[in-house]
Image (tube, rainbow, N blue to C red; front, side, top):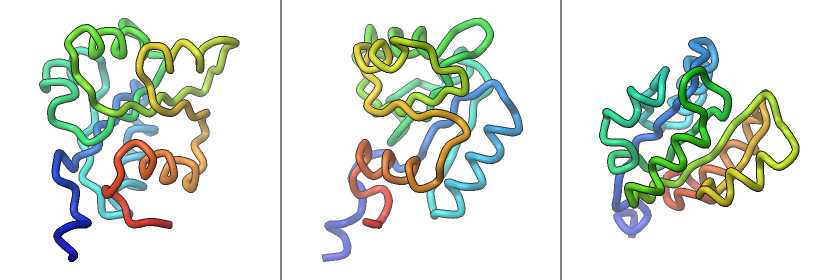
Length: 133
């Protein structure tokens, strides 16, 4: 029965955020809950790492220099990659949540992230990755 509860696909969470302190904080939090984490500072680094094919979920910052989170979502969509995405932002703008969802984000969370909201979103987009609350 226990084997039935283990995820059958990728188990690593990707964190794409241009702020080093935020990447580190998210990484620590997720690892504290037993998750594997790989962090990326730029969209180019993430996409070069085979994008969504290797990850159970992507925590994606919306506002980054160069390529925005919207750009990354559009790229993943055009490549047919179906990694679940949780968009995160500290600079919410009218219409951003709707645009993120139109481009394929499953969740849209505001910084600073609430731990329980983040874990709930992870359970929603990647069932079996975390035990039920």
